[in-house]
Length: 414
Image 1 (cartoon, one colour):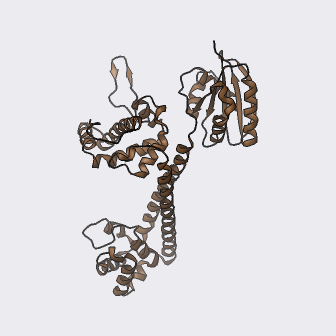
Image 2 (cartoon, rainbow, N blue to C red):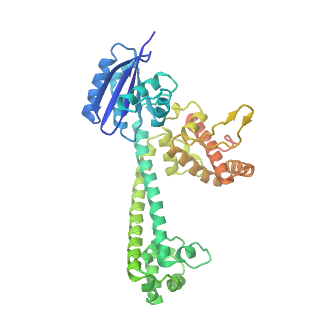
Image 3 (spheres, rainbow, N blue to C red):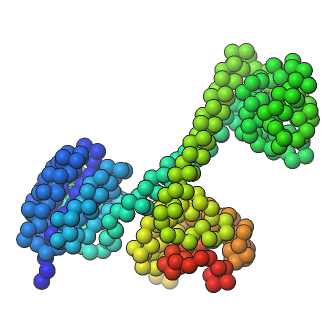
């Protein structure tokens, strides 16, 4: 009978704590090494000596922020370890925490966690993780960076709108009114110029022709009716709140800083979009053949899924994204209201739901599916229909990537 050495590694920023275990659950040896390259090299050398009497290796790492990733890559790239046909397991800390409950009154320590990781993979209920693919890793880095930038921009805009209300009152409301001669976007170039260069008091005292000429030069040919916009701005300046000078000055300063931050972040977004397009070209994919999925969402989906071969079915992919619903049944009772699990990859779930919201507008099959689910919902119809559409989209994407074919709605009908 072939023997396997199970290795559990508790990961932290400072160090790795390792525990090896035989198939009968007996701990064999323990090790502590610092979390840097020298420590990783020491761990690999030690691991080779520990595995000499075994046929296979199963290595589990607690997935803790980014602290486990350099070790995971180093282990997967070590050719000497391939002699033992190693299997890799990345464990969410919640899995380790749940497994801990099978032991009564077990203390929480790093060596104890390493033991639990080794014991959890020994039970054989966990799916191995593929070795890191540098193409997907690189794409995941830039897409997640873009995601964080987009979230930061959204927060900055909300804070800027708060200051805008205190200074200009109805500015945003007028911008949202299509019947008003005004800027179509509060954060557009011409609008930001006005908010940066003028306070309500200054604009009210500036000749109308001067304001119109100023915004016409900034807005260019795309800006329509600058004279009408200038008159609207003057009306807004007259209706603006009359704050005390010190407060007004502070809020204007804050607004200008928020706008400057937004412009900087949007410039970074444009730069990172180029990197995303470059890295996406290195990966064969057909996700972007679906109408409504552009390079940004397509790259995010591809990066988070990784090699599609690691998923045996579209159900497994949906579960990985957290787009599943737990059954709640006891006796003859079977609950109809089942919450979304949300326990999978949050980035992939976000990309699939956002992509589904765009695909349903452009693809007749998805539109019909969304409408049918919307009509059948009794609570939160849009959210329910959109998540179900995202689940359908996950199935379509699984088929596209598995077969390597372009999307054709007639083949993927509901």
